[in-house]
Length: 249
Image: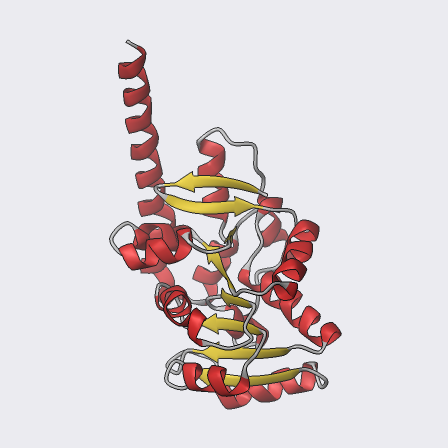
């Protein structure tokens, strides 16, 4: 696992098979671990939100969930590729598989005002994974349910920065939990509310364009993730070049 820094935010590059082994270590450990799934919007928001920044930087693993983050690392001169992304959807699937295979409890925490409703999500998960021991909560009931249910795994989809701050503030209050991960809009994909981009679009890092086509109301978010983020990265690299040249002289 390699750690990088983008505008003060920690991101980790880790192969999927190594991540799976790491997650097993976490599940067998005596303490709780937070996992973040970082995209360009996270990095922009964290510039003005110290709680959010700290929650990412103090996480056990900060996965790259966004083409823009990979492009930024490449622009900075690091040898990474689009294959180094591990999305919230991928992480959730890995953890669900582990929960099924190891007979672990999992709590899904949905945002009450989101596209995917708790009752329909419950039925969808029950249909796909009949042997999975799980419960569904929202931001109003998550902590209480987590304390009573005592899951080993918690997946939180409140959106950023809410989900990551919630995890960092409440993780030590929940018994038995080993892994708590912020997974953003993953539940909308899992429930079928939103279709994932076609494989060819994902392979070229064009998920953002696909999302814009099917959800035009995301234009402001796309602008933030593509235009604003690119500008900040450009300015940061230019600043670092000037500092390096000045120190050299």
